[in-house]
Length: 233
Ligand code: URA
Image (tube, rainbow, N blue to C red; front, top):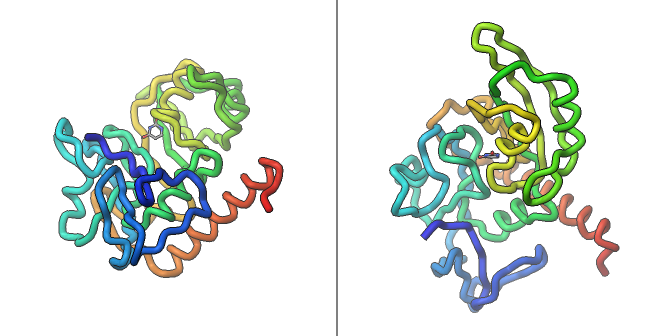
């Protein structure tokens, strides 16, 4: 089974932010597996190396990110997607509520990627990416895009892009839509977290302050989504 982090309370999949569960009474499952919600919450930031699959368990995967954090006790799972061949910021937690908020389709948090693509990318292509491009599953939302460098020797361009959606292979497909193949993809930032001081392959626990900041960001996004949807009571 490929884990997706689907949270359910008493068998009902949780899709709303406000969904609350009583850890003493309710049965909470993640991907069908019951968790002990009374256990301490764990938040880990991993700088994922390429070659590791971002799932809890996948019998077809050569390596999963869980191997890197195997000394950590608790039912952790990765929050959101990061392709096997990509590296960078990946949050692992047993906090289903926060994970759910951070990856909710209508208020996903911003993620920043440093992307190396083949060829020399034009101003026009960068503008198109920032306005949004048409993909086979619909147009992408506006993104923040900037050219970092061009290497004539490699004939590659390095581009930084920030998106707040989390569709499958989204960044690769966006660049493909403007005629460039991604040769390297690094997620440098996930919401309020960045991997600046975390070498590739290493992980660390978030501080209480970092968790609070992440939660605040997720709540702010949820409130904004509520307002845009016509306001909630
Ligand atoms: N976009 C991609 O194409 N791949 C990822 O892993 C994340 C975003």
